[in-house]
Structures are given as C-alpha cells and as structure tokens.
Length: 295
Image 1 (cartoon, rainbow, N blue to C red):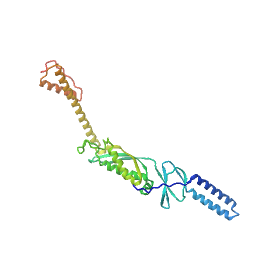
Image 2: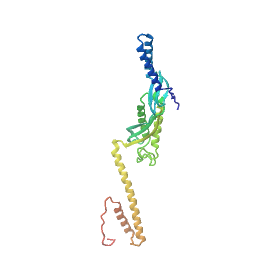
Image 3: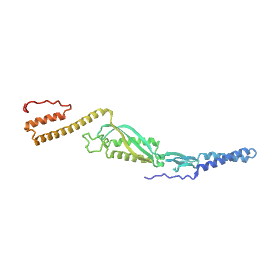
Image 4: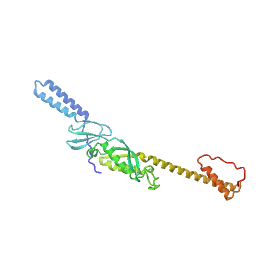
C-alpha cells in the first residue's frame, strides 16, 4: 500500500543549539550592561535575545520507539525517528507518535452468532503504529479511539460468521466454532479483519485473540441445562457400552471354562441383572439365591 511517510534527518544536535543559545544570551547580557551609552549595543542585545528565544522552540527529545511528525505551516516535512536530543527549525510543529506496542482489551459485547444465539464475546488486541503519516493525517480521531471502535466492529463481524458451538442442529459437528477453534481459524479471521481496517490508519496488528466467550444472560441457564443433559447422555453411552462388553466377556468366560451351563432364558436373566448392577446410579443391593436358578 502506498505511503507518504518519509524520514526527516536531524542535522543539528540539541547540545550544539544549547551552546549557541548560551552564547546569544551572554551577548544580550553584555549588550545591556554596556548598552546605555551606545544605542547599537542595545539593539544587538535585543536581537540576540529574540533569536535565543526562537531557538528554544526547536528543541526535541526522541526516546526509543518514539517519533515526531514535523509540519511546516501545514506541510508535512518528515518524521524524526532518530533517538536523542535534537534541534530542528523552530517554526516546525512537532506531533509525538508512539511506535511502541499497545494492548487493547475489548470489553465483552453482545452479538448474535451464526445460528442466531446471543453470546457475549471479548478480545485482546496487540497493535502498534507502523506508518506515522497515516496515523496523524488519515484519521479524524485519536488513534486509541479509532482502534477501539474498529476493534469492536471487527469483533462483531467475525462473531456472526461462526456458531458458538457445534451442539446446534444447524451446524455440522466438524465445523469450526467460536468455542472449539482448535486450528486458530477464528483468531486468524479476526486478525485479518482487524488488519484490513486498521491498516487505513497505518496501524499494524501484532496479535488478536478472543479472551472471553459465553452465552448471553437471557439464555445462559437454558444452554447450561442443555450442555448438562448432553454430558449425561454421553456418560450414559460410555457406561452402557462398557457394561455390555463386561457382560459379553463374563458369558464367554463362563462358557469357555465350563463353569455352568445356562440356557437362553437364564442368560437373558443374567444379562439383565448385570446391566442393572453396572448401569445403576446407586450401589446395587445383592439378593442371595439359596435355591435353584429356576426359582
């Protein structure tokens, strides 16, 4: 993408400018001391003092990962990236731009997912300014405010592309959801959406991740009961599957070792009793049969 950013090379050190300013102040003081008898001395002192005051406006300090955008009567002249104490044209207007990494915690917002369920979703964004020209001249708001508004809009758009989870009958079990983003597709989509929006302001998205996800309050209790029911059903399936395999193993063992011979009716009774014991919610109370199997 085309950029108008250019680097402004500082030619005068701030310490050199201070030395010149001290000399001018000294000249002004000497001129005022010796000036009452000679009018020209007073004029020289006034001029030196005015120049010293003007020089004072040109000082600037750049820390690491900090820049200053320079404008001269509305015209962009460049951006100072070099670190240290410097001096530039005192008629330049300097606008400070931070190049350091920023964190933005997007507060949870209520949106509808792909199947229409209201969910609360929040995100964390790591960003920094990459193009100082765009950051200053291409947006009409504060940079932080622009990032906040665009992050909110991008999060709403991405949340509407996916379902909360795959439990709904309207989604496939293998489809990517907000809750089960194992391959990072949702995070990558969010990062791409933010990059396309924030690049207009010269901002680079370092990382974007969803850090909060829950059903909205009005359906949270209903969805919780549904999830509990699904968990119970899944657990029951595992229990029944294990019980059946154990009964099958017991019958095979009895038949192989010739412990006892059971007809089909007795096998059915044994299977029924074992399944009741293995699948019951509470501990089974055994009943000892002291008679024959056919009582």
